[in-house]
Image (cartoon, rainbow, N blue to C red; front, side, top):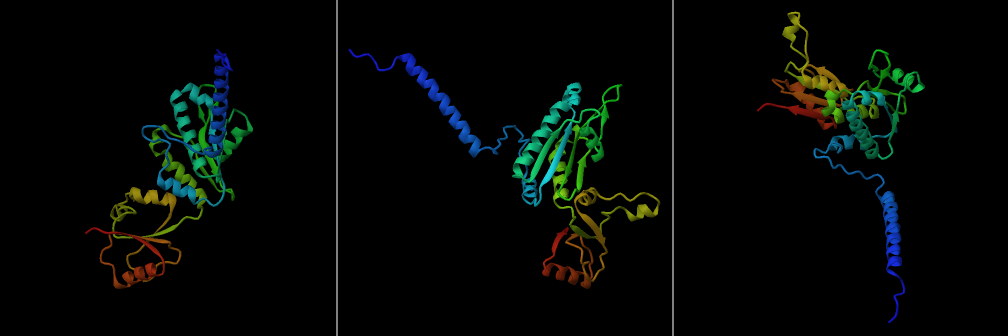
Length: 268
């Protein structure tokens, strides 16, 4: 009876070697083909960017630099901030990956009396003392574009966690498009505030939608009696138009026919 060419031990060793080689090969191939792939396994898809955010990232024409300043001592002293820091950092990494090279992310530790801390202060980040020693800790973001325009989140407040993606996308949008779109607002509603209240000495409080729009756009209120849309207006926003004159309707018609864009909100 012939003895086997290889012993069981030899075969087992060869199997282990083959498995190791296969494992390394798979990792090399995966790193090459899927190096930028990311999978969000959280139940609420916390790290999956919305379509609006992805659209904003796709329109970036120039490289942006995001500088994320975080003091580890803050998370060590208050663990909830450490958890939130991980959420912010991983979200920023998701933005950088989705931007395909148009966003450079720097993660910086502004240790006391360092040049990094000086730079954070110069950007306008908010330092917070943790104890009687007065040592400042930081948890903010400073972003710049190629023309040195700046956008800053002075301190990431945990109570704004549900608005994190909105805040980051707004910051990136403002840097990518420093020239704001001009929105011409035409309305009979008191969106800018109650004029009658102002006449009684009370402050005019704009609607929330107007305040939010002004963070992204240059909003100019137009009267409801105009015969030509101003040349600098990019978009007309017409909210609940009432009793517009023929000349105003004609001006709106001509603006749209010449390629202008209009948002019209009407109540049946």
